[in-house]
Image: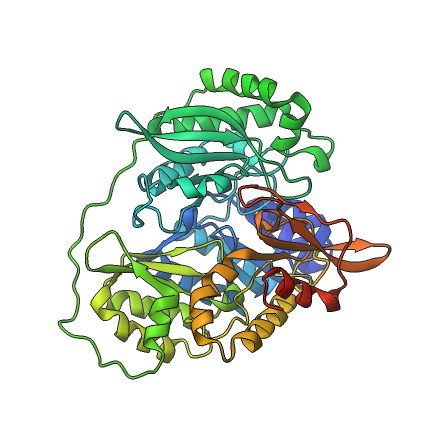
Length: 497
């Protein structure tokens, strides 16, 4: 059980006017609770691996009700944020989260952050094996490692399940890629990477470890970081700066010295048993036009017979409490085990009965009418951070730019239906926009990545360019782009103007 006594005392002083938001930030940032530009607060819920069961979703709905948040936001690291929360609601929400098993610890600050996993792990044909059970056990273990919550800066860990996702693993503080060796499940491990100021590609540390040793590999990096991280200069405090200072070979040797003595238990996850699905014998007749286009843009076969993977789009990643209730209703109706959040700020149903897709299409249009979950429009679908209107460190309004790009794409494809069906997903995968150099959308990895900067006293957009398709990190173009020219330049890079 977590004791928030000190935090509540600091909050009381803030509410009484004897402490400022800046003075209580140190109490609340390790829990992912931050003041927004408008004076209200954001509270971040950890969703390990991005997987949300129906029971967890019902708990999140209760938390949303308690917070009276104006809206919720799905993040680019598969977490869920409550936005525009009155500070008077913070304490009861923290208590409720602990009671429901969703503690805020590690939601922000210099701590162990949310573990990122593949949204389609274990259900796509390329998957080596589903990494989520190991990510869940790893989270439980690291929550017992107290130094993981008192680090020089944050540590980000990810586990991915398929070869094509290696590039995402290689830009983490610690990244695990699923592989098999002589029939044994294991991981290839990289470390010292990261996206942010001075983004860097990680170093291959271990070519193969059995899956059970992921806890030891993580403990080694936590201990190394805790001992060697820069605690006097935050701008140089991430693990990648240790790697840069030592060089690849010496950093690897240092890491291996910690791995050899890491006192961590083997991971022994419990695997869920197959469940009996209770589905209606028939589904409602299909009523709405556009079914075939929706299926082409948003669904694909699962490796499990009779099931489909359904991509449910959430424009800007924002939705209301009542929208979560509609999603819960859908999950119950179709006996769905979970939904999986994605770094694109939306989610997948990964066990949807294929013969019920027409009924789901109707349900999405009926139950979520204010959300374009089906990609009728590009507006709101470009991946951006929350931007400067919400975030205190934001420089430019990235959602607004994303919206303008979406409108330009809608205009281009207005009379090009077949071309849109062919290109839409590829286009959305290519673009990432961050409102400042903090890289919340990992834009340096994108084919078309840009962030807000200040140059010569003016705010402008900085584009990132990858010289070859297999390059992991792009480099910033020398000349920033004015805001009014950014949309045209993106369309030009897409080859659409």
